[in-house]
Image (cartoon, rainbow, N blue to C red; front, top):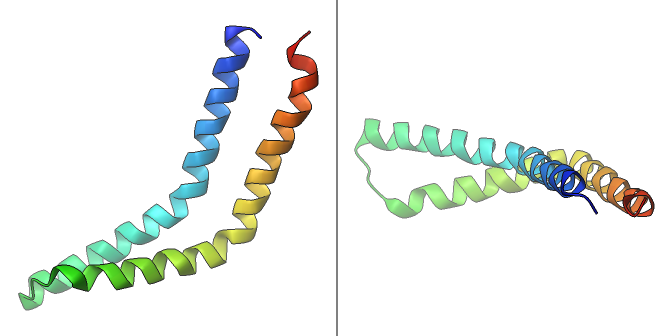
Length: 89
């Protein structure tokens, strides 16, 4: 296995992780920002107030993007498995 193959597989793995986690991270960031603005406007500084909305937003986003995420992971895994035969050449 050449170093180029290892770098290519690593790059594809990082791209897959970033693409797969992106929607959930963006949803959590947006909900956190909205809650922070609400807390600043009302001067309510309750730390536990942000956890439940973020968790709900991440789960809803996971439900919405679940089929796409599965397709992304299946495509990556299939590509890795099919490239095993050509790595030794």
